[in-house]
Length: 209
Image (cartoon, helix red, strand yellow):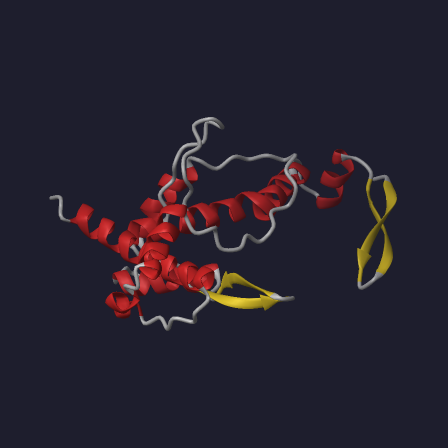
């Protein structure tokens, strides 16, 4: 088996390592034919495809006819349970960040819906529906962590109308305290309105038997 030296970065320094020089050399080193291809597939799936899957499963996506992208309904829309977010100050501005991991969110959905944690058939059915939209792309760069999506304009506009008309107190059920910053308050109220709308949409579809 032939090897070549490659340098890998770790803890601020370069680490020279002798690695297989060809696919055949990799398989010989692994003592298993096809091992190089299997490892390459696993690498692409774990670094990118599964990240795309988690995003679609939880958040779904809107259709984009121009790009030929179909709409995908995620757990937030299906269950009416939104993933928790919080505000974080970065420099002089406040940004929305996730307040729970993907795993924590899914576990909360499973508990809230009363699904069997060991065998969540309902979740598997949703996952199967989402998986058909996944694309294996070995040329893609590793996936990066995505922050909360931008609040859709219709929810922001609804929240702004409430604030402008002085109707904030009518929506005390959301448990929000008005800060006086219209943009900030509209954003917070808009997300709450979205949560409520998603929940009502889900309840309406469940009424059909």
